[in-house]
Image (cartoon, rainbow, N blue to C red):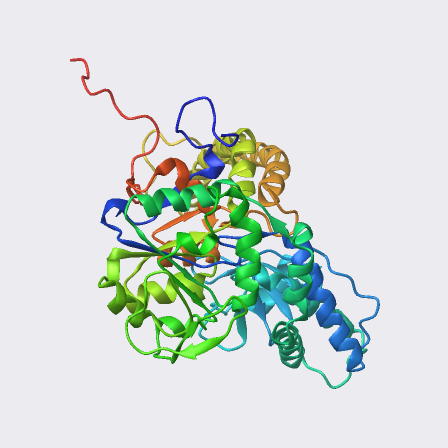
Length: 488
C-alpha cells in the first residue's frame, strides 16, 4: 500500500489515528458514517469555488456589486470564527482569547486587535460569533470577508456587518436547496471527487468483523446514490454494490436534529427515490429518509458507547451524538495530513527556537534578580554579605540587556516562521503559538479519536485498542528520564 512505510502495518505519521479518549474497537458493535467530506472527499478548492460562484450569481441578481470578486482558497481556514458585529475573522485559542484577526481581507496588527478584543472572551453561545467548523464554510467566509471590504468602501450602503453575514448565509442555503450545485457535481464527478480506493476495503473489514455499518447523511437520496456509486463501486468485489456495505442507509437525516428530536421516517423503495411512510423497526439493508437516532438504536438493539459515529462536522456529527446519546465519536479532518507534515518539517527550527527561548528565560531571570539587588542597594535593606557592589550589578544588567537584544534578533525570524507554518496568515490549524487553537479544543472535547480519512482504519483493523496518552501538566517533569538504576 502506497501510504505505508517500510515496516509492515505501520501507518505514516500523517495517516495515523489519534486518540483523545481510550476506545476499544472490539467493544464497538455498530459504526455510523457521514458521507460528504467523510466517506467521500472533495477537491476543496473546486467544490468551494463552485459554491462561491453560485452565491455570487445570486448576489449579482439582487443588485450587489460583486462582479469583480473571485474565490480565494487561501484566504481562510477551517476553525476560524466570524465576528458578525465587527466584520472580523478570528483565530482563537482554547481559552477564548483572540490571537489573530482579519478585518475584511486585511490582517489586523496587534494594537487594533488588542483594542477590539482585550476584554472579550469568545463564547460561541453568543449569536455574534459563527464557528467555521467544516470545509463547506470556506466559500461562505471568503465571500463574507470580501463583502466587508465593499461595505467599508461605501459600496454596500445600509448593510451592516451582521446583515452581510445573513445575506451570505441565505444565499448559500438557497443555492443548496435549489439543487443546481449538486447537479453540477453529479454531472462531472471527476472534477470534484478525490477517489480513495482503500476506503471501501476498510469498511469491508469492519463489516466482515461483525460490525453493523450505517450511512447517515444529510444529502438527498439521488445525490448520495450517485456519489457512492462513483466513489465506491469500482473498488468493491465483483457484483457488490455500495448499499451492500451498510445495514442501514439514512438520507436527509437533518443532523444535528437527527440526534436530538424524533422525526417521521420514510422508506426509499426505488432507485429513483420513491418514498413511502415507514413505521416499525428498520429493515436490514433498508434505505430510509429522515427518522432519528433512537429508532436506529431500537432497531439494532444497541445504544450509547456501543456505537461509533464518524463525521467531519464537529457540531452536527460528533458533538451532539456524544453529548445527547453518548455514542463514541471519530472526527475526519482532511487537513490533518498537511498539518502533521508541516509540524514535522519544522521540528529543527522549533528545537532551535526552543533552545533560544530557554536561554532568554535564563537571562531574564538573572536580570530580575539583579534588578532586585539594585533595588536593595538603593533602599538599603536585605543585602547578603557577598552581594556584588551596586556598580557591578548595574554593569551586569547592561551586559544582559545587550545579550537579550541579540537573542531577540535571532528569535524574531524563527518565531515568525513558526507562526506561519502551513499558512502565512493563520499558521497551523490546531495551534495558536504554543497553545492549542479553539478548533483543537473542540476536537479534544468532542472526538474520542480523529484522523484524516476513513481509509486510515485499514491498518489499525476493526480490533484495535486506541489508548489516549497521559495528559500533560505544566509542572510535569520534562527532558530525559533518570536512570532506573542510579549509581551510589
